[in-house]
Length: 352
Ligand code: 8DG
Ligand code: MN
Ligand code: MN
Image (cartoon, rainbow, N blue to C red):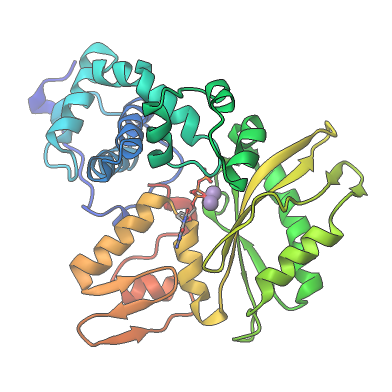
């Protein structure tokens, strides 16, 4: 063991969008623990606490080696008293009693199971728990009224919980890509989300679609969806069987759809996969690409940086300069980072 006097503290910048963070994590035990507490806070509608744990975890993810001694953390940003206590517990005892008891708590387990159903958020889950519903069987037996998304979510619970592989994501890109090409030959489709950051699995597949001519993207989404509904059904092709890219659950949120489709891998089994489709006009494409690549914390930190340090408002549509009272155009992610006065961070280093 080192003396405190021999320890060189780590040093990282205060905002996650100033840090390069690959998928290599030297502090996974600590960040898993903090992420679990973040998740518990988020599921309990304590977003402030959730963000605090997420920020603390992101700082540890960015460190070049494993933390072995508390004094290495001196001066690091975003590590509040609560997070430091958890880290100390784990360094000294191998586990954190708070994390362990959270993991084992009936309420946390029930919240996880119920919000794991597509279409169920923490408010609904909380109401069900107060009505004595803690698991899927109790939910089925309860006679609760479920909307279409939730019905499909319950029906395909095991599939949707199962991570999507990169191979599956690419297969789905092929299908959606063909559909896009059929309804609008010049339209472009890009894989965003975790897969663009280099992850090999994900909880869904995120696509961003645009058209090189401003305005030609209008109406693309409904055309795409009806093409998928009518043409993809029961289309057999080698190892890939696509049937009924579900009409089950398609809900529009502005121009955003989240739908679920069945694919067959080599197993010829069907499975449901969550797919997020976003259409963006070309003038907003760089902002949409940046906004949908993630990670969620990286995005949040970009917006915090823009607001607090630059007096600007960043969204996945635009960048607005609050002082000058005008929108700032950008046609690439690099330009947006430059406007924000940030060093460009490539997607595979945005894994905060
Ligand atoms: P995963 O699916 O591999 O598990 O992780 P991910 O790809 O990083 O997460 P995600 O939940 O699919 O989210 C990808 C990005 O999309 C994330 O940075 C935040 C962004 N995003 C949403 N929902 C919304 C939304 O409603 N509006 C906007 N503008 N962005 C959103 O997830
Ligand atoms: Mn995703
Ligand atoms: Mn998504």
